[in-house]
Structures are given as structure tokens and as C-alpha cells.
Image (cartoon, rainbow, N blue to C red; front, top):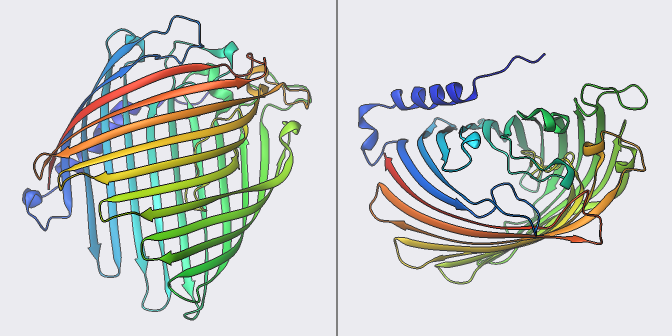
Length: 419
């Protein structure tokens, strides 16, 4: 049996250690250190993401936190570290009370020659917002802990050509026994060659290999075939492009030929195209837009070979479109807005614990609208509010694998930062 870890105690000690290590001159303008406190109040109109037509419990959550960090260059290197810990208390559903944390360490490095790169380590633990089949809706607390890291290196052979590569790993673990079969461990290695004829555009051709597994896929009982874990591999051939047609706009994209194979979940064996296309546009000095279209599967999904993106294990493939905008209304007020639409194909293999090709599949559509504003009242004081609305629809009548729901979440926070 895996030994339980005291997550709140560990995260609190981490934050305290960072805070006590900061010198007394942390408040000076030139100081690379910062620390602060944060208080947020959140209203959630459907805490458990219950289906449409059922009573939807509302709640108010108070979050009190500490945060600290450093951004310090030295020589040819730069060290960045941050840590935050929050005590979250629910007014009505006290069984969801929790302490979350988010810690990150990054070291950027370079040599006298043309070799450079970075190292990243991260560890975060937070309340999991359920994205389950209708048969697994629960009001119990599930904490999702994600731990990972990445190493990346770049070698500039000449001005025109460069080689880059790296390795990244991640494991995601659920605290709730019901969801332990969705735990995942994965690691990916990549290497690529980049051509950069000018500062305006570059193209990269690379390969990736991902090896991972769902170590508890069968739970405590072996599934048909005698296996208890589902191992998977993913091979990607990537073609990436970056293009700056003007000084105010930039295109970035990736097209990948992806092959995914599973030892148990045969219905997820596939060979298809994945990738993304993004466009950044600075309309004025105060207004910026980002449009992104993406397609990817759940296993092995990563942010351009740097870090994995934790995806719902039930997802086979997701297509999404996102539009985000930012407006600097004044020197102290910033407004952000966005809309995200995604359509996914999923199955109930993790619900039935059966990896056969007969696993039931379904499709749903999720629309998320959000609006936020922040006010930098003073150099050390920031206030912010955000409201978002989620609306999930199900295609067809398969509401056992997925289900429709709606929720609105609003939050306001006050942050006091010392530098």
C-alpha cells in the first residue's frame, strides 16, 4: 500500500521556508525576491457539476494564502522559483475543505558557446473539479496532485540552423479511491532541427516518443486478460512554424502525425493528425488578442515538448477553439475576456474498468465564457475579480458516459505583495 503524504504540512513548510529565506531588504526596488498574502472569496453555483434537471448545490469558498518567489540572474544563468499555499474553506460542503499548493522551480542556463537550455520542476495539489461519467458523480473530496519536470537544451550550429531536444515527465495522482484508476505516469523524449532564415520566421521538424501507463487501471481486481495497468506509447512526427508577418502579429502552429497504442484499452489505439494553430495580434498598445485552434488526445498531450497538460483520462480526442483578449484600460486597470469551445470524444473504460473495444463512446461539447478585471491600487496592492460560465452539452442520448451541466463561478481576491 502506498504511504500517505501530508500534503498540507509539506506545502506549508515549503512556503514558510521560502518566506524565511528572504532577506530584510526584500522590499527594495532592485530586489529579486517577493512574498505576500492573498485573500479570495468564491461563489460556485454548481459545486459538484451535477447534471441539468437536478438540484444544484451552491457554495461560498474562502481562500487564504501565502506566496513567495525569486527571479535572480547570476552569470549566464537565471533562477526562478515560486510557491503558493492556500487554505480553502467551504461554507456548506465542509467535507471539501482543503489546503492546496503550487510550487515551481526553473533554471535557465547558457554556455560561452551556442549551448543553452532550461530545467523545470513543479509540484501542485488542488481540489479536483469532477469531469466524470454520470455513474460516478460524487460529493466526496478528491485532491489531484501533479508532479513533474523537464530538461531542454538547444544547440545553435550556425545562424541558420539549430538543434533542440529534451525530456519531460509527469505523474498525476488522485486522493479519492474511486478515481485512483485514472492516475497516470508518463515521460517523453524529443529532438528536432530548426531552420531560422530570419527573425521573422522559423520552421522546426522534430520527433517525440512518449511512454506512460495508468498503473491502477484495473483497480484492485485484474481486468480480463489478467492485467491491472494499461501501458501506452505515443509517437509524434512534428512540423512546427513561427511567422511574424508584421511587428504587431505572429502566427505559430504545429502539425503532428500521431500514433497511440495501448496494452489494454484497444479502442484508443489510433493514428491521426494532432496539432494547433495560433495567432497573436496587438491591435493597439493597450489591446491584445489570441486565437487558437487545437486538436489532441488525452495521453501524452504536452505544451510543445516542455510540460504535459493534464487532461481528463476519459478523453480520447479533443478539438478546441479559444479566443482571448486583454485590454489595459488605464495604467492600473486591466480587463481580460475569453471564450473557449471544445468538442471531445470519450469512452467509459475508466468507469467500467474494461479496456475492450466494446467500451461505450460518446461526444460532448463544452463552452466556457470568462471575464476578469484587475486593479493595481498601489505598487504592492492588487484587487481582482473574475466570473466564468460553463455549459456542457451531450450529443445524442448517451448520458451514462457523459452528461450535460451548467455552472457559474465568480471570485474576487485581494493580494498584498512585498518586494
